[in-house]
Length: 86
Image (cartoon, rainbow, N blue to C red; front, top):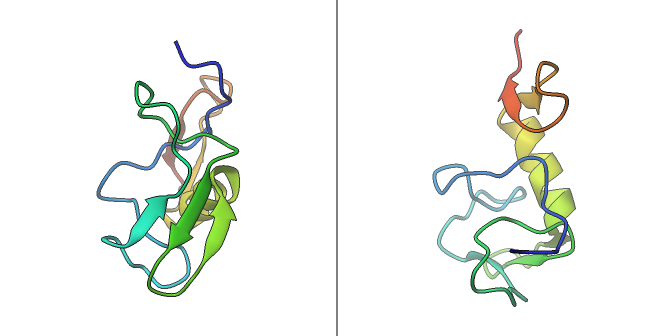
């Protein structure tokens, strides 16, 4: 069981990209130290090897959430996200 704090928004593989340049292949979690946990941690360091973007997992998740037009689900009180209505 992972004891680290996970981001509320967990982008899937198709959504995972650099928020700055959109790179998918070279955008990685630099200091991933828990092999058993596949979730994005708030304190993870995410780096793009194409444009040198560097941010925490929390910042990346929040930025991708906005770019993907997702909001925190009001029904489940923040345990998931839904598509933002226009």
